[in-house]
Image (cartoon, rainbow, N blue to C red; front, side, top):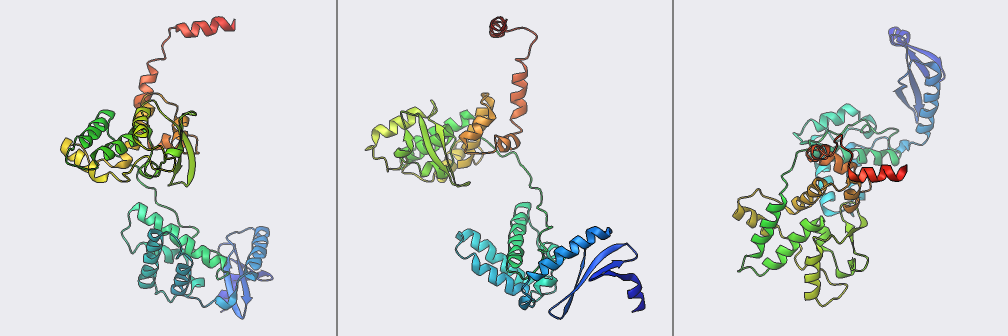
Amino acid sequence: MSNTKAVFQKVGECLYRYSPTGGYYARIKADGKEIRRSLETTDREIAKRKLSDFKRDLARIDHTRGNMTVAELAERWLETVRRQKPKTYDAKALLVRRIKRDWPKGADMLVRKVKPSDIELFLATYKFGSSARNSCITALRQLFAFARADKIIVDSPAATLRWTRRDRPIRKTPSFEEFKAIVASIREQQFSDTAEESADFVEFLGLAGLGQAEAASLTWGDIDWKANTITTFRHKTKTGFQIPIYPQVRPLLERRFAASNGALDKNVFSVKNAKKAIASACKRLKLPAYLHRSFRRMFITRAIELGVDVKVIAEWQGHRDGGQLILSTYSHVRPVHSQRMALLMTDEVSSSSKVVLFAGQ
C-alpha cells in the first residue's frame, strides 16, 4: 500500500501524478464507484483541463446502465437498425452473433470495461480480407458510438481502430473493339427472345458510360433531345446528374425512340440485367468474363485516352471530387496518355501559337 501511495501522488482534487513517468491520472468517485483514467500528459496545466473535461463527460453518463454487457448492447443496437436495407441488416446481425459467440472474455463483459485491445483481439479471431475487416470495423465503431450517445460510456473504445488499406487491382477492362464484338455476338443470337434488347442495353452501357442501375431505370422523360442531355440518378451515391447525349450514343437512342410509343414514363430498355448474355458472349469470343461495370470502365479509359479532361469525365460520372477518384483509380491509363501528349511538346512553334503570339503583340 505504501508503494502505491509513493507511486501515485495526489497533487490536486481528483488529480494524481504517477511518479515513475510523470504522467497525470484522474481518480473520481461516481455513484460509489472509483473511476480511474490516464490524462495522457505530463503537463500539469493540460492535465487540469483534461480532468475538467473528464468530469463534465462523467456528468453526462447514465450510471444506472453501468452494468450493461456487450451482448446486451449489441442486441439493443441491432434493434435500431432493423429498417436498414436487408443486406446491411444481415451483415450487422452476423456481427452481433459473432460478438455473442466469440467476444474475448465472453460477451457478458461490461461495456464500460471494454478496451481497444479487446476489440483488436475480437477482430483477430477471423481471417478477414481488407474489405470485410473494414466493414466490420465500421460496424463496431457504430456500435460503440451508439453506446456513447446513449450515455453508457464516456469514450468509444473503437474510436482508435484503423481501416486496412485496400488493394487497388487493375481490373480487366475490354477494349473498344472487344466491346463492339460482344454487342454483335449478343445481337446475332437468333434463337433468343431478348437478344436485340440485351445487345442494345449493353451497347448503351459502353457508349453512355452509365452503370446497370442507371440504364435500367432510364425513361424517355429523362432524355431532353433539344438540350441534348440525359438526366440520370447515381444509385451508389444517391445523386442526380446530367450527361450529354454523346454523338456515339444518339443513333441508338433515336432508333429505340422511333420504335417506342413515345410515352415519357416508359423505360428506355425493357431488359434490366444482361449478365447471362454478356457471360455467354465472352465465352463464345474467348474473352475474359466481363461484367456490366466493365463497360463503364471502358468508357472512362477510352475518354482518358481520347484526351477528355478528367474533371469533365468526373462530371459525366456524377462524381463531385473534381476527378480525384478517376485519377487514382485509372492511374494505369494516365502514363500511356501522358507519353502521347508529351510528343506534342516540341521546340517548334505551331501555326496556332504563332497566331496567338501575333494577336497578343
